[in-house]
Length: 362
Image (cartoon, rainbow, N blue to C red; front, side, top):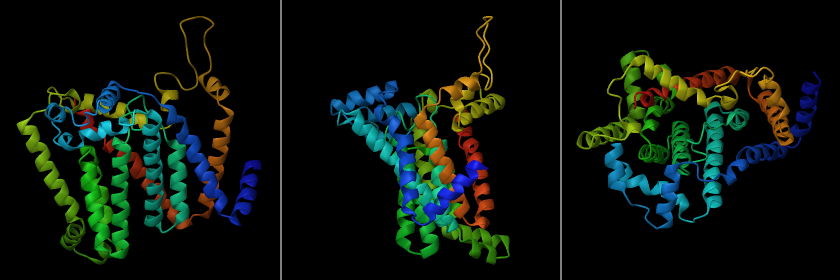
C-alpha cells in the first residue's frame, strides 16, 4: 500500500510535467546499456574479424565463407562483420552497437504506439524491453558480432513501422522503403524470414479484411497488400537454396543433421529458447532457491545470496522501472490492455517459433 501510494503521488507530480518521465526512461536505458560499453573480444570469430579489419582486409575470404556456410549473402555482407573494428577501438565499436540497440528500443516503442494509437503503450513496451533485456553466454548481439544483428534487426523493425505507416497513410513511399528494409535485413540473416507472417498481418487493414464476407476475397485482400513481401521471400529462397545446391554447406552451424530426430530437435529448441527468459543465469544448472553440495557444511540459499549481492545501483534502477511501469500502465487506454496481453503471448510464441530451424542443425 505504501509503495502504491508513493507511486501515485509521484505520478500526479509527473502528470504536470511529462518531460520528467522521458528523462527517467533515458536514465534506465543508460543504466541497462552502459555496462556493456567495456565489453572486450568475446569469441574467436570476433578476434578473427578484428585482425582482418586492422589489416584492412574487410572482404577477405568471402567466397570461402559463403561456400562453407552455404550462405550466398556472405559474398556481400561478410565485410560488415569486420566493419566495427576498422577503428581498432572497442569503445567505438561497442558505443555504435549500443546505439543500434537503443534505436531498436525506440522503434519498438514507435511500433506499439502506432499499432494501438496510444503513446503510453509504446513507452510501456520500451520499459518492459529494457527491464527484461538479458544476454545468454557470449554468443549474443550485444557482446559479440557487433553491429551485424543489432543494425539488421533495426531494419526489420523499421520495416514493420513503415508498413504500419503505409496502412494508415496509403503513401506508397512508406511501402517501398518497408519492403527494401525487409529485403536488406534478409541479406544478413535468413531467420528474419520467420517474421514474414507478422509482416503479412501488419500489411492488411483490419477494417477492409472484416468488411469482406467470403474467405476467397479475404485471401485476395491479403495478397493485394502483402505481395511485395511474398515476392521478396520467394526470390530470396530461390537464390538461397539454389546456392546451397551448388555449394552444399559443410559448416555444422548451417548443416542439417543427417540423423535428425524429432525429440532431440525438440530438446534443442527448448535449450535455445529458455535463454530468452529473464533470470536465465540464476536458474540455469542450479536450483533457484537452494544450492546443494557434497560437503557437509557447504549448503547455501541461492535466493539469499542473490538478494544480498544486489548492488545499490540495481535497486535504484528497479525502483525507477517499477515506477515507470506503474505510471505508463495507469495512463494507457484500458481497452488496449487485453490486446497488449495478446501481443505478449504472441511474443512468447515467437521465442519458440524462431528456434525450430536452428534445432535441426548439427
